[in-house]
Length: 191
Image (cartoon, rainbow, N blue to C red; front, side, top):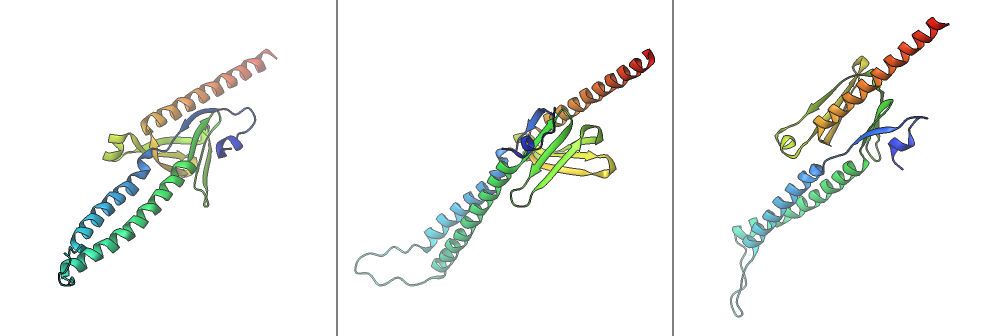
């Protein structure tokens, strides 16, 4: 069960859910490609081709550099595996939803960070996208609440659409509250 569904109040419904973009895997992918290129280059420098009956190979500076590049590529390969696991955790453990009463978000697996902000307490929703984010349509969504509370969630798919949807839900909530207040006022006048 998800964090958001587990923490819904009575009569609270999820109206919108945002997801993390697969671009969180980009650092791991780039590291792996660099690792592969370094390994191939290092292997080509370290390889010594001998023919049967020839003298034993001698260590040259080129062979030593090639061997060092192979070692570096092994460490980079391990680092790319670490980055992949980190991206998997971010992708699978980040939840972001807007209900008819509040914004609920959770990040983290072992260290958990949550946000539960009532819709009337939200002052603004901002979006930050770099060039790659603009090209691949992802970015950081920051929800600012009253009192200066500010929470950011990175690599959210379609951040402009998320901001627009949150603002629409807040507007609908405020209109509903105004109707309730008007109805209560007219009911009190009848009495």
